[in-house]
Every structure is written in C-alpha cells, then in structure tokens.
Image (cartoon, rainbow, N blue to C red):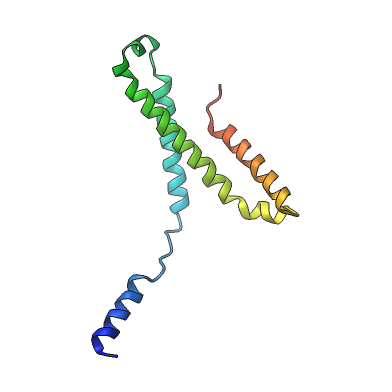
Length: 116
C-alpha cells in the first residue's frame, strides 16, 4: 500500500464518520413546525370570501393550506415518534403497539388541529 492510498483511505474514513445531531435539534424542528402551522392557520383565517371570486387570489390560501397540512402532519409524526419507546414498553404485542400508536396519532392530531 502506498502513502497516497493510505491518505485517501484516512480522508474517506474521516469524511464518512457518523455525526451526532445537535441535542436540541428535535426541539428546534418542533418549534419551527408549530410556527409554520400557526402562520398557515392565521393566513387561512384571514381569508375574505368575497375576494375568492377571482382565481388570482387563490394562490396564497392554497399555499397556506398545503404548508399548514404538511407542517401539521410532520409535527404529529415527530411527536408520536418521540413517544414510541414508551408505547413499546407498555405494549405486550405488535397489535397492542399498533393500537396505542393509532390512538396517539388521533390524540395528537386533535391537539394540532385548530378548535373548530
């Protein structure tokens, strides 16, 4: 093995070494998703139905609906996934784990959706 090959292998090992994410990454991501969801809800609440007659006015509400739905769904998934280990310990089998996970999804979705 030549010195150039060893250097190249060392560089590859260094470049491909696993990197741990920052400790507060999940909190920052959740905060960003909450903010996006709230901003989309505010945008949708500020709709004026009479201005919706013109199709050119549909872009902002449509974008707000897409952003709100995407951020809300991601927020629910993030929160449910964060509680997965606890549900695993509480569940006796896969069916019970699936039921608990679906219940958790439903409860979290009710929390994220605006009161209507």
